Image (cartoon, rainbow, N blue to C red; front, side, top):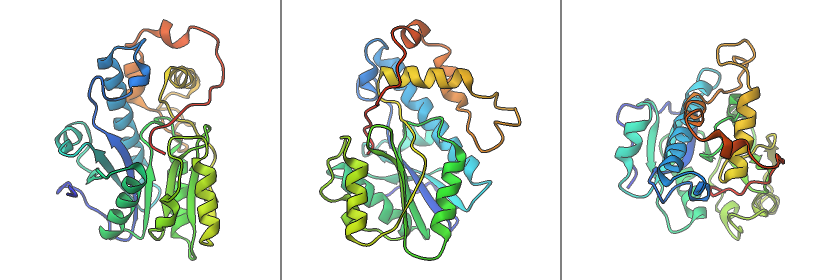
Length: 265
């Protein structure tokens, strides 16, 4: 069942962007952060990420014709998302047998709700620049067939945007491996679909990723600064939560630039 928030103005004709999300539950979300974090702390991080990703979508609406959604799992968890997210974020029940079907189902549902372009977005990149979302919407608004792909540092992707629901892009993909982005580009070439590539980004799914995020937050401009207003995004919910966690666990050990595994693509 697809669950639409009745308070949402869906902005027909706009670019629908859906965050692929799991409801926060201790022991079931962000489990690769446990230990050193507790299951409750890991679940709280998942919630903070969702809140920041949703706020980033709302920020993008000020610069492009965008409508924000969360495509959620598991089934029956819509009340959790209504509780933690702004009412302007729509909801899509995305429970399907596998990740490829979840992504394709969400793309199709965005088109069914009247959007001229549909985008699936991960839920683990709270510092994703707003400008990447704006660039995606504007690229998909141009005439001609194309897709937008945001590659992740680990070989997956954090974003895929389409003007038509191409099933082939989700077939024969080795999900949750370093081959996902390359295989998606191969499928696009097979069907003659041009790709607009965004800059690479990272997502946070393990302790190394959390350390990387912590380092990034220490160098980001304050949210009220001129630089911060230039379509970067300061994840206030995430920053506040990390301030309450044991920083020794985040900053200890050798600081390397990790390759981070993702769950959403």
